[in-house]
Image 1: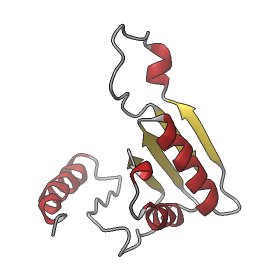
Image 2 (image 1 turned 90 degrees about the horizontal axis):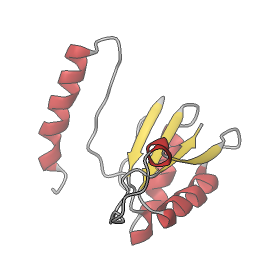
Image 3 (image 1 turned 90 degrees about the vertical axis):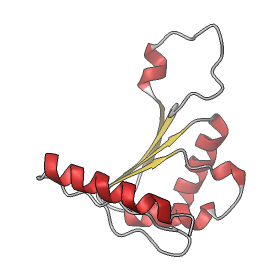
Length: 130
């Protein structure tokens, strides 16, 4: 399976975290979110969900938002169209008591633009669902 190569890396990272931050419980998982829902979580971080490229993103986003209901889900996107799509999906799947907020990453508001435009401004948009 494609995901098998990540199991060892995530297990090493989880053990490192347990050793150096024992008061914080961290579970790092490799999971096909179309097939298996995420467990309940107080904090979920989703980096660069490629929701504009097709695929099974609707059930994946639903799984992420259901698992984080009552906690905080943070989505970080690269592009404007990804951010708008994640916002639409978050508003579709969030619980009635949740709020959705999008902000520009403060890093990009503090740094002056470069002369050469970047092909990708990593994590430019942050979407919070709480």
